[in-house]
Length: 217
Ligand code: AP5
Ligand code: ZN
Image (cartoon, rainbow, N blue to C red):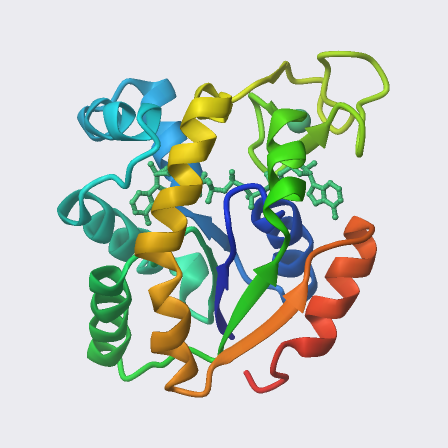
């Protein structure tokens, strides 16, 4: 199964992807997580990405597409993957089509998470991420850790993302509307999009997503 997850910053893509990937038995591929791993390792790719991420802008396609392609070609992704945060503009969507076509593959579905803007702002403002494992995502009110600043799942340190400041979030939302939303129409034209509400409990959204996703593998 090859699925793309799309939705505004803070919609809950990373949170849902952790559960969905497990349920579907496919790896969760997040370009945001890949960039953050490169930044913490101090790689040249990370250094390049950091300035764009800090500004809430998209990292250039020539960096992003190659990184995503390499990850999709890892052995664990041979039978499918859940893409989170890629593609993020039309050029990346077209590049993804080409990457899949070269291996005689195609997408099975695009899951669009719908959340009102005031809710995503609240979700991002309270988000805390685990330094050891990017799939461990908390919220100071909606999903608080048992002890402040410590990940319940692995004991890792919780931190606030550098790009979660109010000003950068505003920019990220702007970029989402202008650059990313058009890919929803691109995929609608291919009959691939299912839209669900991402409001409610995390488990309720996961259930909604599992019911909406195609069953074909
Ligand atoms: P990326 O890391 O992809 O960030 P994003 O798309 O802005 O999405 P977020 O990670 O902010 O939110 P999310 O939807 O995953 O929400 P989460 O589950 O954490 O990208 C960051 C940057 O990297 C970009 O700005 C860009 O610079 C660069 N980049 C990445 N990919 C790129 C690409 N393809 N091309 C170019 N540049 C790229 O949840 C948010 C909060 O809400 C959490 O606190 C969570 O606990 C809480 N929450 C989740 N679900 C619920 C619920 N149901 N109820 C209550 N709270 C909830
Ligand atoms: Zn953790």
